[in-house]
Image 1 (cartoon, one colour):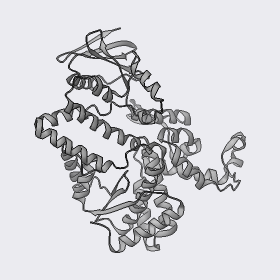
Image 2 (cartoon, helix red, strand yellow):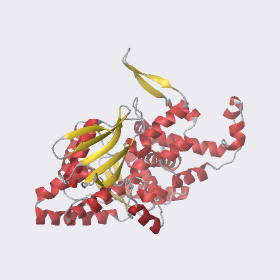
Image 3 (spheres, helix red, strand yellow):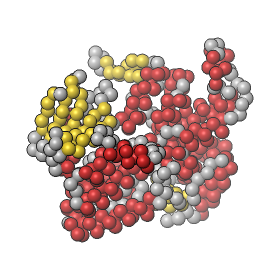
Image 4 (cartoon, helix red, strand yellow):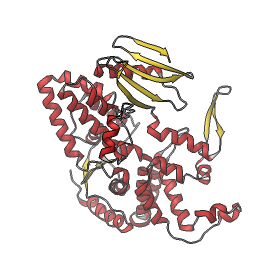
Length: 450
């Protein structure tokens, strides 16, 4: 159901003010839906045209129960597409609709202008519909259970891709040289399987489709803090300065505070993102940056520093364009901001059974946060040899960075890979300081020391 009446006029007003502030977004199409429709769309990852699979039904059931029991509620959903599609919950209050519409326009601006979305498919709604048609066709040809079982195996491995692959701008000759090197070190394991695993043509096509969809979602995962912070920054500014009536301020403050609320031991991307953007705006408005500011050792003087530069808006738009979460946090999370947000390194104290502050140093806080953001906190695994030991076995290598792999998860991954590879799948890693080779041969797991 398209927007009508008051909401339609509110949308137009918010769009006008958003553009007036300098936001530059795709044409955005809003649809009003009820809770069941929104849960269904959310279960498909925002794409109701996707291929049929049991996991989407399971996710839908989970979302419906969460809503029914009051454990969760989806206020909106917005899709990186051109035009940009957004869905509003019909039961939202008018204040909530205002928040959501402004929030959506800022997301659309981020999708359009952030460099990490530059090469994403802006017609992904149509692309996923095409994938669904192809997968249904394969189901008719080879049996729906067979196709669904194969999709299950692929989805269990969908994180084995190179999250930086879309941003590599190698010359074509260098790409071919890299491909022909004996030492493969290929992080895009799904792509490697398409080229080297003994798959049937229909299986290769499905794997390529799922790989393409996995890559489409990478920029959203890489910019979660920035994207939600940017949207919250602008819905707050647009509504409080231009849109809200006096009678709506308290409701807005209550709902906005709920969005930014943080749970102990967890990072709320909305909260962290908006606070960093607000800090950037203030610092560049007052000139709190550069060699002169950093060289000042008078804390009281720095606290009151104000060169009246007025460059805050210019800087936040620049940051929105050029950064992702890792570089955003690394460059703009300051010691003062860490202190204000109570961001410390915590550790569990077994003696009293509580979490306690272990370190207040900003660099240590950053290191811990950046470690969780780099590669989404997942281990770095590479395909190293498609003919290991001269027997057609697959060798993977783990880039050990101080944290051992979880053996239960590792063994499950090797089992799923072996189903696609058919022969032995081996993994070189480090366990308790020793180099080991873990192998699954289709029946049993083996382990040996190098």
